[in-house]
Amino acid sequence: MEKSIPLAAIGDKPIPGSQDGDATSGSPIKEQDQPRRLFSISQLFAFSLTYMSLWNSYFALYNGGPASLFFNFIIVMIGAMAQAASIGEMASMQPIAGAQYHWTWYLAPPKFRRFTTWVQGWSTWFGYISLLAGIANSSIVILESIISLNYEDYKKGGWHTSVLVIGLVFVQAVVNIYSFKLVIWFELLDGILHCVLFVVFIVVLPAIGTRNGPEFFVSTNISSGYSESPFIAWNVGMLSCVWIFTGFDSVIHMSEETRAAKQAVPRAMFWSIVMNGTMGFVIAVVFLVAMGTVEDALNAPSIVVGVLMQVTGSKSATTAMMTGIFIGAFGSNLASIASVSRLTWAWARDGGLPKYFGHVDHKTRIPLRAVVLTVFLLCSLCLLIIGSETYVVFGAIMSLSSLALYLSYAIAISSMLWSRFFKPDLEFGQWNLGRKGLFINIYALVYTLWAMVFLPFPTTIPVDATTMNHCGPMMGLVLVVAIGLWFLNARKHWAGPNVTIIDFVMRNS
Image (cartoon, rainbow, N blue to C red):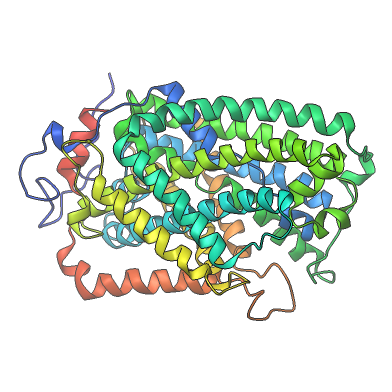
């Protein structure tokens, strides 16, 4: 019989001042203070499957060509599977909305765990806010490509994009607040549509598209200026594949609303990566077979629209297929708002954000204040697009997501490795990697750190104000904010995650 997770890290005493009551009032935790456990394993799997739909390939073609897209997809998929397997172990130990920062508190060396958990919490939260902004923007880019295809005088970007993003987010916020059960069923239906659309694409593209031969898959193309540094170009091209696999752990933030979470959450996360990765790789292959020349694809306003128009020769057929992609993106963004708001709620109830946002509405049984804060921040970020044709500032926010979340993965997996070596009484959950766990954790950490090296690299050289990759400076700003808050207040007053809440959630998982 599985033992419950101790309140503090194994073998450690709670630090003085450790929180021992409700996150907002100090009173005992009550059932009405928690969201309802609505997700079944199939619904959670569909949630994760929709969230991680994979359709982006631009920078892989731009930096390395077909060979970069083909081989880097395999490399990144294997790396993401190792990450998901490693994080799945931690999710099985503690399926809780705070995810990475809770695991860091549980697994990191006692001497450093409070500071490390603080940095982890801010890195994860900032990363997910920026990832949400990127997903919402990507959804509207798909919608605008459909509009431009049918109305050639439509002007993309600027305030048009801002208005569409805010409109999309407003509708999805209303659904998340007042009809959250619809989100669950929409994600299930969207997961089915995702699979149907996959079948349509792999049938249509090879059947009537260009037939590029096997030699095309190993051909290279460097249009980014890195022609004298193919190694760097290859790794920079890998980053588009990295971005589409980023955020696979989003499903974990729904743990406290999932039945049998210790089994359901890691399984849904890992197998959705396997299924989506396999489907994404097949889609990449059929696109390479049918896309025509790399130059034509890169010169098109949208690679996917350009390829579909070339293959089908029909605006109506292309519009229909792109609409299917947009519905999937709509579902992904809907799920993202739910997931990020739960992380916001968890980080607030543990004192990282104002505790006002760590509240569950008694009527709707959702973290209403956290949903509103999440949507407000997203809409505020979208205003940065106005008056910026090149999306420089907004792009800087978006670029933060991969590096911030990869940092959170690195901290969590490093903490797990430390515990494997120095906590012989470490208890694993029902999802564990057994004897292979150590090697998979090491591989996952090496892959994560390797990707982090190249995430700040510019995708185009020479670098100017419009082509600079702001990922590094933005990550530096996040760390400055987190460390600054630590020394200003948290070092003396923040005791770590609320251990009573952890114990309550574990007993009900």
